[in-house]
Structures are given as C-alpha cells and as structure tokens.
Length: 342
Image (cartoon, rainbow, N blue to C red):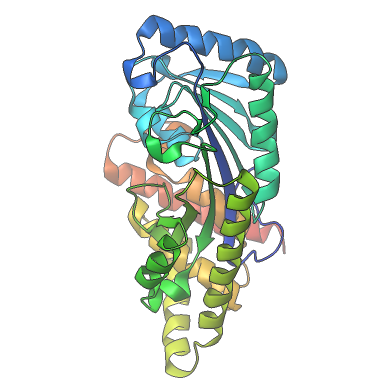
C-alpha cells in the first residue's frame, strides 16, 4: 500500500496519515551513547522478531548514500537516519505501510504511514507491531514519565501522529503563519513535506502533535483529527471563494503548468514540485480533467533525485541529464498512460 493513493474522505486535501512510536530497550544506553557492538546486537534482536513476521531488513551500513536518500524520499526513514554512520537498520512491511527504524535517535521508531485520513488505522498497525516487540523485550518505561526517550519532548506516549495536507488556497492567501500559530496553542505543529526543518514544498504540510506527555494516545489522535477537519474546512472555503479575475488568472497558470509537465524537455526537482502543486490544485477545481491524483503521487516519488537516479537504466551523470530524464518520465506518465484510457 502506497501513501499517495487516493482513498477515503477529502481526497482533494488529505494526502496521508502517519503514526510513529518511539521506544527504547531496557539495559542499553540511548543511541547517542550506543557502541557499534550494542547497536548490532539490538538490530539482530529486533530482526529475530520482525523478520519472521514478514518484515524485510535493510542494513543501512551497507547501502549507498543514493539508496539511503531514496528511502527518505519515499518517507520510510528520516534524513538523520539516512545520514547516520553507526550501525542502523530499517525493517519494512510495505503491505500495511509499516517501517521500523532500528537505532535512530531512539532504539526503535515504529511507523505506519497510510493514504488518506487514516489515523486510527495507522495507530492500530503501529501499535500491533509495538505489542509484538513488547512481548519479547522490556521497553524503558517510568510510571511517572511514561516511555523513556532520547529527546524529552517524546516522553509519555512516545507517539507522534501527523497528517499530510495539500493546502494551496490557504498558502496563496497567506494564512499559513496564522494557522501554525493557532495550532501551536493547542499542542500541534506544522512542518513541511519531509518533516522537521523542511520547507513547504508544493503546498504540502504535515500537521502533527507536539505534546506527548500527560495525554493518552487516543486523546492525542482525537485532538489532531479535530484540528485536521477544521483546517480542511478552511481550505475548502478558501477554494470556493476564488472567482472572477482571480479564478481566470489561476486557471491560466494551472493550464500552463499542465502543458509544461506534459511537454517540457527538462524539469528540475524544484520546478516539478511547483508544477505538481498547480496541477493538483487544478484537478480539485475541475480545471484539469485528464490527470489523476494517483499519477501525480507516483511522479512525486519517482522523480525525486535519488529515486530517479536509482530507477534509471543508465545513471545520469549530470544535473542536466537528470532533469531531462525527469521530464521524459513525467511526459510518458501523463501522456502515454492517458492515451491508454481513451
């Protein structure tokens, strides 16, 4: 199951939902003080439980930087995890959107990412994996502080839940700063496409809980989902308010962006994301009719620099060669695929 599939309610606005649980094994120091032998021991222990359950192990110490970055682009791991030099591994069970990072900031980051507004299902999947591990290992836990984590901001439930939203109207209207300020007052935060420290590429934002201590997982999920629904309402209201000359100018921009995506000879990654945003907005407004959200979602992953390089029959040697390859893939996806539907 891929996180960019279009499912459920609000497909024009909601892209995906993610739940991540931070856990540490008792008897070991936190990852920042973990020796190589101890890290490998944890990885082997985790693998002895997860691999028989259908997870595939990828030992990151033995893969190329390009492949590691591709896992970041596909939202399986964090940039920090990809860049680590000490032993660390990823366990994947892609059918249910599950990924377990071993020896990141914490010994375990158990994550489930699913398409659409699927917080409850993502939590159930992540929790089921956590319980499988809990049956075999003792997690570091305090009656007062909850699950003990490397960063104090994750104490308590150790849970970070987020929903990725597409908010072009709020972005165009200049409302994102006010939204972020309002959400921060109720313990939520707004981040970019690739999480903390990333920009708001393509009008895509992750809204997640900041607070993990003092509330149950169910309370945190309920608070987040309520805020998401309110944000969706604001976005949809803003979209409906676009009319007259503003709508004509927007329509022109969207159709020009569609034409560039379909016929450009070269496309940089940043230009693609900008055009992606325009065309996705056009689909939601009924301006673009022969491109689907699924096609754009696939391209969003396939055309990221590392993933694009890995998929190429002959690895592009220069940035220009990569930009030409990106344009070729986009053109084939948006013209050839659609011809097959006629």
